Image (cartoon, rainbow, N blue to C red; front, side, top):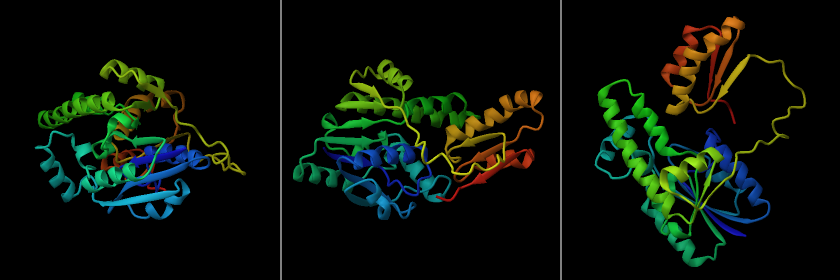
Length: 288
């Protein structure tokens, strides 16, 4: 098969769960099929295009900037996003050059399948009716949880506006797509019930057992490990809840229970967990 795969970024350095899922999927497809990969070449993410031969026959980099959260450029982008009908998480990756590149490729080449990887690349797809949408989350649920748990009224108002935009955009995109691939049966069920999507299937995330079977097992350095992007709001909320609500229950039975929080760019509140508890260690970004 000849497959056109469109995503909002390249897959190296592989520091996100979404990167890992897509990379391992494409490596297997690349072994048997011809993959053409279109992605935004983000100014904030270097080296991705150079390693794209690991998973595709040909790559098409589109220069783009999506400022890192917390920077002045990000807050300026967020302010401008208040006047966009798109949710900020999507509008950050909208690219007219990418749209034109996808249009040109679909005119020039005959692809057996076209895949939009993640919801964020969807505005750059000229024809969703011929596109498979590869979903990694139910994005609107993430924003709903942020709205429900916002610590102050102003932030709650902002999150609610983003939730409403995401709910509308995600629903319209899922219904317009040729078909949808969900990350789990639970997500597939949610997308069906929430958006009335009927053309949907679940493809679970696999594990490379050969890669994760070390020849010599090192002695464990912690009792528990949480691995994930530690600058992503759902992970920040999740591990804070775990440390506050669950870890004390474990330590009633195992007082010396230790925890390692491993993942890129830990937020300040994650760093504070380690400062306040000597049995918690935060690794920060791990080498790839």
